[in-house]
Amino acid sequence: MSGAQVDRLEALARADAVVAPLARLQAEALQIALDPQWSQALSPEQVLAIPDEPLLHRQRLALDSHMVVAALHALLDVAIQAEIGEVLAVRDALHTGAFDPLALLQAGVVVDSPQLTRLARRAAVAPELLTTLGQVLALPLLHACGEMLASRAATRDWAVGYCPVCGAWPALAELRGLERERWLRCGRCGSAWKFPHQRCVFCGNDDFRSLHYLAPEGQQDALRAECCQRCRGYLKTVATLGALSHEAVLVRDLTTLELDLAALDQQYQRTRVLGFPLVVHLVARD
Ligand SMILES: [Zn+2]
Ligand SMILES: [Zn+2]
Image (cartoon, rainbow, N blue to C red; front, side, top):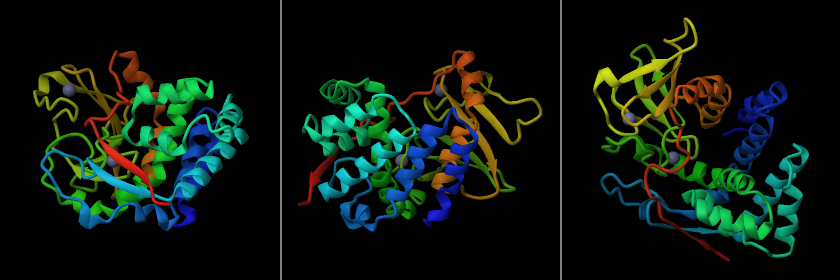
């Protein structure tokens, strides 16, 4: 990925004050992901494809702990500039050794909410802040893994709705090209995988009577939220010419928040937990 590719997140941050802090953090995380050391955490040969298991499940990832600390400090600097409350307390907690950055990264990768709450308590900040920081800290590593395993993920025999690399539910679906093939996209690792039309990604429901969509007036071919009355899940769907970059997936997600509000207003839900109970072992290489 070139540096120019995070321009859209940065432009979005300048244009929209509501999403600016998260857009800036994500832009910084994708810049950090350019360091080739992240992809040394895993060698693709060690990864076996087990049916229905994300490729990262039960993997041991070895990381340079200095790189993780530097990444967290870079993200904290961005958060401080964005005037996100309480971030100074997180930086102080790091300086006093109140929690380990590798533990925050581990909790972010597997979305371990109890652990994120414990770490937040140690830093004396709100759990929501540490959850956000843990998730953006996980982005460079997950992005590197997603790039490394992209061809394996795209060719897997994969019939479930969660990400074939990291186990997350998709951030959105693409209706790609003239054929309008349905591709699901992971916002964490950037992976893409094909999925049948007219089937709920969350519960597998394919009864058209309980599947419908919400869309802005006259835009349903370009943008909509596909909703399942059985599990109350919804998935934003955008028409695209081809595959979106990972950055573009994040931008599209942040620029369609009105659709999230419309779906939430109708009592549909967007889950932030993973679709698969991912287990990953992060270890310090040094
Ligand atoms: Zn993923
Ligand atoms: Zn469903």
